[in-house]
Image (cartoon, rainbow, N blue to C red; front, top):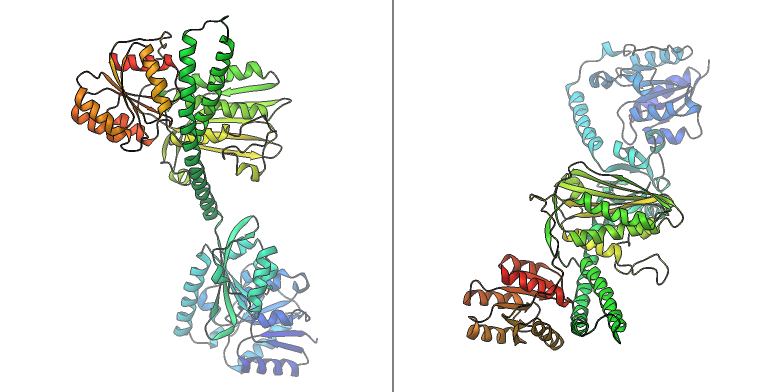
Amino acid sequence: MKKKILIVDDNRLLRKFLSTHLERAGHHVRTAEDGFAALDVLSDFAPDVMFVDLFMPKIDGDRLCQIVRARDDLKDCYLVILSAGIAETGKDYTKIGANACIAKGSFSNMAKNVLAAVNDSDAPVQADKPGPIIGLDAVYSRQLTKELISRNRHLETILESMAEGFLEIYSDRVVYANEAAVLMLEMDLENLLYAYPPDLFEGKAKRRLEKLIAGHENIARDKNAPVDLHNRKVTIKSYPVEGEPSTSIIIFSDVTEQKRLEEKLQQAKKMEAVGTLAGGVAHDFNNLLMGVQGNISLMMLDLKPGDSHFEEVASIERCVDSAAKLTKQLLGFARGGKYVVKATSLNEMIRKLKTMFQRTNKNISFHEKYQNNPWSVEVDQGQIEQVMMNLLLNACQAMPQNGELSIQTENVTLNRSFVKSFDVGPGRYVKISVTDSGCGMDPAVQQRIFEPFFTTKNVGEGSGMGLASAFGIVKNHRGIIECRSIKGKGSTFSVYLPVSHHETPAIEEPTKTLQRGMETILLVDDEDIIISVDTKLLEELGYKVLVAKEGTVALEIFTARHHEIDLVLLDIIMPDLNGEEVFAQMKRIKPDVKVLVSSGYSIDWQARKMLEDGCNGFIQKPFKMKQLSLQIKEILSS
């Protein structure tokens, strides 16, 4: 019976011999020099029998057989491997879809065995294990072939173990793809081989590969510009093969995680720059507010409810309080420091805040799950309360009609892989989660939620500082804050705070009355309005006040009168000598000098260092007379 036969072998003489021999037997024969050429023939020719060499350039016999077996129109094709090398590889030829295997030997023996195989194709036998290699007994073992096969195995093992996708391109077609390429492109190997490379991609990546194939662009030159591939970011690099102008190598790497980390770093740098600006604005604004607040405190001493102008003055003070809260949020975002740091148990603090919000949001169902015996964290409780209030407020506002709000605390241990993009160390943390079932956010909004003054609310409904200040406060506590949200399905904000090694102290009730004194205080500040109002406040409290508008002047006064000076109220930011330098020189003159640091900034790194070096306390502008009186009395009494 006449058969359609395809012979695929890179040996031109063998192809010619076998095709002539089979044509004389009445068969229709076509030939191809490798697997690549065979696929071209198979585009318009469906053979009954194929004889395939195992080791060929371009697409080898192994992969060619797999491609043939994957095609419905060739499922009945009788496949015969032409190779003795398969015995030396130990490979099971039935695993690649072949029906039989003929060892290459003398042409006369091969002619007989090839005709026998054509006859066997009329009634192919389905076997569970491969039959013997036909003609193998007439072929001697070849050490060189073994060495070449071993070397090929080593190279293939290296390529298959690469994390990068590796494609070999010949005449604008894929002739080899490693496992990583198959996984990244989400295609079967059979469909990938012989494909036109640009057809494997879409959009920008496809256009770039078309330029590459046409020779108009060298992608290796633009290796850092990633393209989208199945929701991943990949870079593409192309390399020519020396001496083979029709062959090139394309390597693509998954840089999704790398790009995510780079974006986080860029975002962190942007937030740092905006924070520096915000902190400077807040500092100057706080100095102005101090002038207003100080004079209000003095006026309120002579007024009582019912007096003329009492309500007007009280209203001004409320405005100052509101402005001071806004600058505190700005300073919180600017990572301006923690005011009063102590070991704190979070559960009780969160319960109180939840109760307050539950009372005013009856339409929302609140759920709580608290860690038993939570680890203690060392935080500024007021600032962490501010963080939690912002998170709870956002969650409630995301559910204007009704919804579910869940709060959870848990002890967690974070490893290096989790913390590496947050600029904090691994270890033990207490995690606070606030989850709502509200409107959620799309990725574009999530990218900006921690930026100052960014808000999705209507004008007048929010300042855009809540999450920005929460971000700064948590970062300054060496913690992590992150958000996961799906549009229409709600959001979860998670805060991780590092564990403290100190016990949680008992809470003391603050004294509520003004504390007066008669000691001598040296007031050091470069702002006229601060000098004026602080002098009046201190004198009203009964203290004798010495004034210095510069650091050098302060040192001159302190040198001459340090025996009578009981306390120094010291600004940090001054034009000649800053507060840190002034304090260092005062300590040399009087080692036990008592200093209360005052600044429009919160406790940033400079103020904290001064406290570590021996300063006795910190008070942030604008402050009220009662707050000033309490802190001075506490330091003088210590």
